[in-house]
Image 1 (cartoon, rainbow, N blue to C red):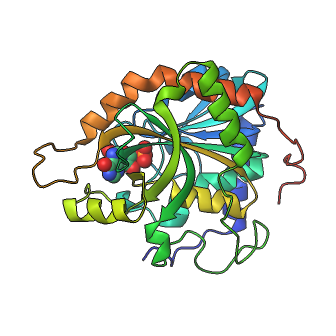
Image 2: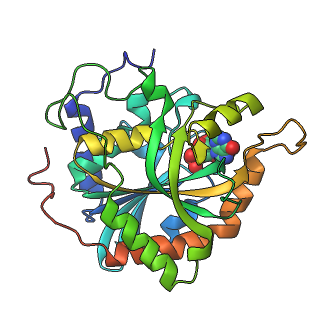
Length: 296
Ligand SMILES: O=P(O)(O)O[C@H]1O[C@H](CO)[C@@H](O)[C@H]1O
Ligand code: HPA
């Protein structure tokens, strides 16, 4: 079911044109807020915001902690667009719907995508409240063919067989670590590998052990398809996971993860994540060669 739906170039363009007719902002940076991280949009100045339900072609958010608003605004001299709420495969959206906004952002002239998420940790060194800079991902649905790029390739966006090595920009990862040191938060920040599973159930203990043995540091139910589509169309990507819980790996452990707990850690760490992302956007260089006139 997931690979059948196709979205035409015109449909992405229609949504981009509608947004450009509603706001003067021409974003260079797009931010996707993970569960409980919607406050990232609050830092934007001179906001124009749109409910997803008012944007032609946009899917709807159905998950608690994902408000369902697209917010445009200025941040430290850069024009940004922020998704307060993302779309997940488990909500029943096709993968091309979950990643629909990414291609719209490309058509709006966005150059850099910042993805954030809430994730459970498998690495012993990652505790709830820690921030993991995503160095690489394992896209489990993608490995078995559930990929937003399945179906006819749209050459206007990118190649049939896009490379994914290096999809999390090294320069931005280094800059984020430098900023973390300056902000005094490097002690609870490290790089790691994120794995996407389909959800919506959290992992069994046997699944958790499998992921751990495979070298996964943190697990969640999003992000990888967005990054695949962004990389395909040439966006630079930076990603971070806020560790909201430890994934239970022992049959002796009676702890149980739940979504409310995930959202709570998001709220507790919101200020730190906000400061880090703000400074990263402030200091990142933008090429400005991806404006709406030469976007595909
Ligand atoms: O990945 P985000 O959207 O941050 O959300 C994470 O939090 C939810 C589970 O609590 C899942 O949707 C998982 O993917
Ligand atoms: O433990 C988890 N597993 C999967 N997704 C998640 N999102 C937050 N925590 C988790």
